[in-house]
Length: 217
Image (cartoon, rainbow, N blue to C red):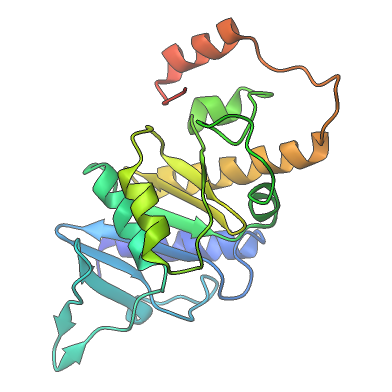
């Protein structure tokens, strides 16, 4: 078993234990060479095993093993492959239905390039742009095509009325971005529409972008 797969399984258990992946709602994947290994349909991140990982090529073709195919991948497999297509350095994709991100995905975005106003430094430092991707039914390839074809630079997004997706060059980076999106969503919900909310200034945001190199705007 790949070290990346082992790391992903441990990360999945951690996400489930923290309440960010209720039931069988979340799915995760890693890129190993020219293959993608992702959680199979109907699996729980809390109990996911290597035997429950589906294998596909980067264009979605199932990889056979031994006498037959590996398990059927999550129906969200087009979203995972769309994120890998955006950046050849990505090695992990995390898609969650974490509570705050789901709630925030039902709200209007702050701007076209990001759902979250810059009210703390952290989402700017760790993720950057988090656009709201227009709704499509779970598993609908149309939403994956919107992710794949977007000209906007981003490492994570909210999927409208659905949840979040995040990618990274390592398992830890992808997971950290998913957690940061959840935290930004939680802050968004706590603040609501208060008129006295202080946003970071343009100069303060610019300083963070220059220091941490995340995409913004």
